[in-house]
Length: 237
Image (cartoon, rainbow, N blue to C red; front, side):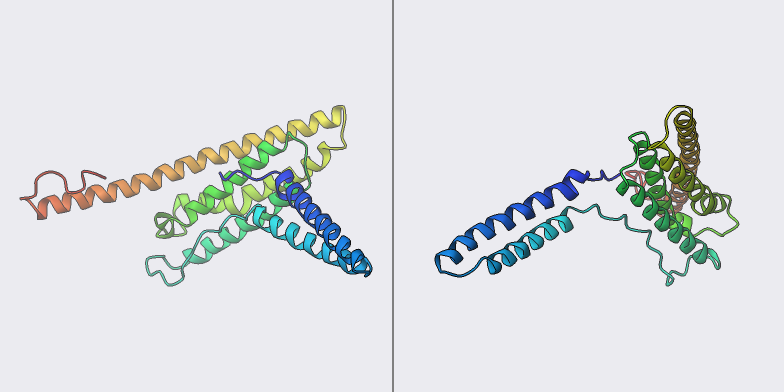
């Protein structure tokens, strides 16, 4: 998973740079303006403008970029009827959950919440990767892996993220038994995310195995059609 930049980098560095450039510009222009007998209003406005431009530009460059959603093409002819709407629904759901997780991060939650946020975010990335894979896009909506992936994207993960939002909100102000119960809930959410991760492991293994079987069939076909070719034409795969 792509490592997220901390607030010191996305907020602190742009603020310091913008302030430094703004103050420096004001001092340089202010001295020149005083020597010329003019006032300080123009240098002040210029310094503020330069600070905003530098700080804003730096913040834009250092921002945490959102995760690219899976790419779906309605022009593909190998996607079975009814599968594309299901895939689009999953993409929409994972995109929404990514926004909720980003909102929680911006709220600077308790340190115990961060590993669970990371696990949930990685889970969404893996769902997106599967949704964007030709192996899943070529399956029917009745396929067992498709049904499981749809359940993970549209129901299980959203419910756990919602519970995580509630738990994170209780952790900060809570103390004593209330905090202990909130931590227990957090651990339960983490375990359930782990179970979903194991299910994604199985779906990924199955997708890879399907590709391997297809390559084996193709290799055998070429071996029979090209008997004079030495060795397996796909041996290097």
